[in-house]
Length: 284
Image 1 (tube, rainbow, N blue to C red):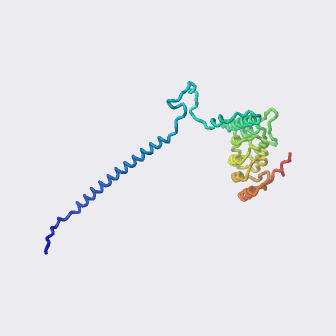
Image 2 (cartoon, one colour):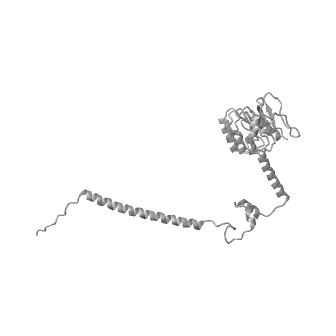
Image 3 (cartoon, rainbow, N blue to C red):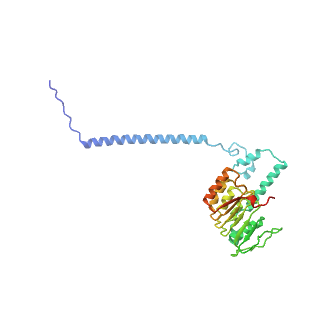
């Protein structure tokens, strides 16, 4: 039996392209709407969570809290350290009062030793450093002068009060001084200095040595660190002193770590010699 099949007209390629483009546009638009709705929902949830997690208002800022007229003088910056201090019991023992007084004096001395640019502009780097050290009980020696300049009993010394090109520092002694990290900024740009001693300066540590090594001493040959709190970690910064020939420490064989640091330093600077302080300073 023969079946007559009705033939459909051929579909043009342009029509197929238009249909595919229409379907794609509809699908993309629906997807964009779904993404936009999802983003809006997530943003709304995050905003709600932030509102819930928001820290409570301080006491006194809420409408239902009672406030006195003295609130005008209150400090809006909450200081946790002050709160901790107020919660501690008041200790008026002689030891506590002594510790408080010593810390106060230390803060004052640190402030007084800060770098003053005007002093260096007026005196120059050499005279400014000499004034700073002599005022605190140290000593200074200049080129073409065999004397060690020191302050007298009244704290007075004879040095120019303005820049003089003939005063070039050759040596500085800061022995037994109470010298802090802030004060070392005053010892800078001493391009002719050859000798520098911090013997028995108990406040001189690794950070202080790092500042000294970066203070621009291209001709420094002798550095005395005996009696300080220098460790093996601090010695690594001495590579910045290319002309250093003699380094004085308490005991170069104090620990294996210190011996290793010294060996590495000597390898980096073959002309450097490191000796113990007791071979130079007399026991007192």
